[in-house]
Image: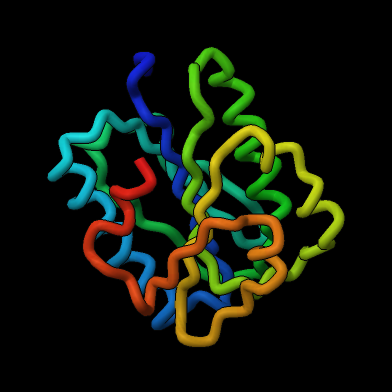
Length: 167
């Protein structure tokens, strides 16, 4: 139900055990700030939320920004990013008729258990979307992800207006 001027945003959340505590709390706060910035701009956005740990799941699909509320999610398990990339790729394929690449915000501490660098680096979803890596927590391990995702936001040094600059 999107129109040609609408921005499609995917929020991908690492909900693995390494994110419990300070990292996921910084993610929750950052998402609140992101939504507030976009609402202030009256941006025309549809949001989907994917979470991953040992499995990847879609929690919200194509919710208008005005109606967005961050859903509850369960924490724990291993961090399997390749499963999130596969689910994201499937969702993007379903919405092929959109005129521009979707915007993907990947919130993680970077402690990925299934990080076969070649599989992640060469995943087709990287060509289908514009990615922003959002580093969560004081002790991130995002070096490998930064080699494939050039746009990075550190939630520890987040400033007002950073999220709307990506629209």
